[in-house]
Length: 167
Image (cartoon, rainbow, N blue to C red; front, side, top):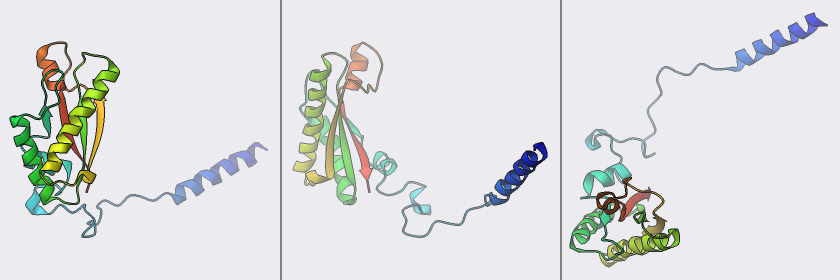
């Protein structure tokens, strides 16, 4: 009986080992037009990607005052830069994330973050960006950019961030 069990185990191991394949040392190039070929002129950055967005706009985020959601002149300049990039990349969709600092209740900060993200969305729409290309989400105080209970940290957390979600 033990010989039979040992023999079955040996045959099973040989069968499993024979089925496995060795990975090739080098992979063939990706087919053209699949979005994985970045070409030499882009420096490895895929056009229309989040990396491309960050490299070509003044900033991916705008900041707000305490308990505010108005888009000021500095924010307008940032959103104008984002709008120009979005116009050059008409297939791209973005997500506007609204954030708040740690002060206030969770529900209040979720609502404030949504107002901030919608303010940015409305300004981009006023510049000619189709609002259907822009989704909005609020994280309230749940995703701080800076940890700390001081004005410097709070100022960094009161923001709306634009993220590329689709090409």
